[in-house]
Structures are given as C-alpha cells and as structure tokens.
Image (cartoon, rainbow, N blue to C red; front, side, top):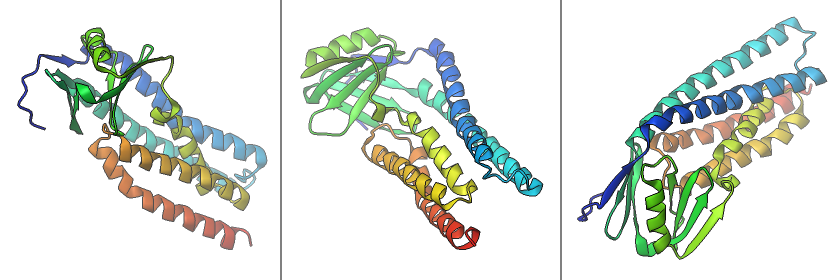
Length: 251
C-alpha cells in the first residue's frame, strides 16, 4: 500500500522479547499436538475401543498416532519459524492522519485516526484497535517499542476506551485447536458410530470458526489462506469415514 504521508515515527517489536514468545509457542504447540492424541489413546484404551487384545490392531493404532504426532510437530516447528519472521518484520508507522501496519505475509493495513471506534487495552498483552463500520481491527502487541506512547496517542482519537483482563475467546483461535485435533482423531480412529457422529459436529464447528475468522481478520497470512483450500478435503474425508463405519464396521 502506497501513501503520500511521511511517517512521524516508526515502531518495531522489541527483538529481545522474541525468545519469550518462542518458548510460549513451543509449549503451546506441544500441548496442542500431543495433548489430544494422548487423550484419545487414554479414552479409547479405557473403553476398549482400540482393541488392545488384538496385537496387530493395537500396534497399528499406536504407529498411526505416533506418525500423526511427528507430522504435527514438524508443521509446528515450521509455524514457529514463520512466526519469528513475521515478528521481526512488523512495522507500525505513525502518520499525521493515521496508522499504517506492515508485516510479512499479510496485507498492509492503514487506519485513519477519525475511523477508530474502540481502543481496547488487554492487560499484559497489547491493544486492540477497532474501526467504525468495519470488521477490520489492528492488534498492537505490548512488545512494541514505544507501546505506551502509541496507546496514549490512540486514546486521544478513539471514540471508546476499554480495559480488559484477558483476550476475548474468539480472538484466541488456539483454544479451539485441541478440540479440532481431538475430534478428527476420534472420527478417524474410532470404530464406534456413536462416537464418530458425536465428534463430527465438534470438528465441523471448529472448521467453520476458522473460515469465519479468516474471512474477517486483516492479519491472516497467505499461508493460512492456502490452508483453507484443504477444508473441503477434510469434510469429504469425514463423510467417507462416517459411511465406512456405518456400512462396514457395523456388520
């Protein structure tokens, strides 16, 4: 995005704080990747749905889940690496009439000061800048160099100022990831039609949430947009699995 304005100041994220974010991302990905898998193993082992008495099926199931964990962790490491590049590429330009955000893999976002509807300060997290008559918003992490000065400037222009103790749940997509992974594992591993049918709406709800968030988020990356193309494939796989359990395994 080109603008004729010359920036008054340019702000980047504090480089020294990235390591703290890396540790958080690593812990989160460990929990997201391995937590649901171990939970599924524990639940189905207790109800005997993994057929531990059948050595071949039991070992096959363990091997499948182990491969899923390895693939999941491989992609998690890639996400952490890309998150680091986006962290260091973040730039916030303070213009005479607004803010311009630039970051790797996401479109530039320009917000005139006279369109700011709400400034929401989330304690120890950052600031959410919401725009009038639009679903667009700008998230400013508190790792920003000069964060307090930027928030003070925005407060002068915001029509509404709010302080929150925590992020709203719909702005924390990682909360849904364990449900998404756990439900798809239950669908693909279980031979119980009731369990498969119960897990299906949970999985579809998580997929729908991802699509809605991607449609309205101005910070969605090109990679995340590409990932949306695989969602119809996942839906077809779930439908085929339900038919397989219903027509084959129930005999």
